[in-house]
Image (tube, rainbow, N blue to C red):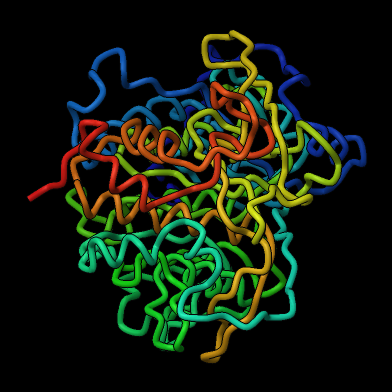
Length: 468
């Protein structure tokens, strides 16, 4: 959302809020651009974290109330910087500042500005870091499709055939799943009529489309109906909300992705939104921005989702061949549910990114996280592609939608589940892939490989009963 109109009359620079410029706030990309004397640099200003927990106990606020409070807090946090930017825009040199956008969910501002303006912005105490608005690119592999039977091997592995025999009505009805990706082919028979909202952050088109294929493939694994003769979708009657944040080449800007993440938390723009997703699938990722959560551009946005009750599913990444500690952002965040990839033999794929992940928490404490959180089938996954066809893709991008669909089924069983409860159900019911007698979590596969049949069947024994 552009705030020019909102701050049109604000021209005062609050010099008292500034201190000496701190070059340590710049990431390497911004620092290199300044050293090159680039005319303008696209960057993200990350502000101090917003903490609602001090005044409001978890679970006491509705999603709409959280959105309102976060907007208010972000406006307060960004006020002095906006005053400076407005003065610069209206009274400075036109070439120094050409674009400003804000993100209340992430508590951040994106700018396209001269190095001089960025150095001035670094003086503000409330600006925690200034990060290059870099490109985020998809990595996945298109494989030769294998013959499938009634169910894809992925659905077989995670227990969908047994679950449908036991609970034939458990198909994701009434559950909204968000997908941030390359878009969707809304006319594909696998989900025709079930795309409830679409927003294009690449070309601003109004009609849903997918000029890459990755997003349609992901959506097929989440919610494909099986009309092609093979059951491909975990939750084939779920409603889809689609944000196109990646281009036909599979790339997108950090600012565009933050805008998509903010939008999908409230697609119809109402505080009492009927299209707010229960779970959002993110089959994309970037390299680590910062292990310090206070400086990470994704941390506040993912926390906002969690506060609003939106389950955040992220692909772990495809850098596993490089060894350990290869999980990037946002999957490496402690509040993100990171998904690794397994193959037809229930072995972790060589490409699936591994942990551990070292972070500096909001309180300044260093922690080492075991990641991924869980694994799911991600090698040679058969699913939908634009034009009514089907292909096999490989990547943790293909594993994550198995989890997103499974979360949709759990919310259909009991829509009142809290996110920590969903995490516990998924992890405790997973198929352990290691040899430790204590089921020790692994930086290769997390808690194990998803088994949604076990998850649903064991909900009563875990104390989570089916909603009637």
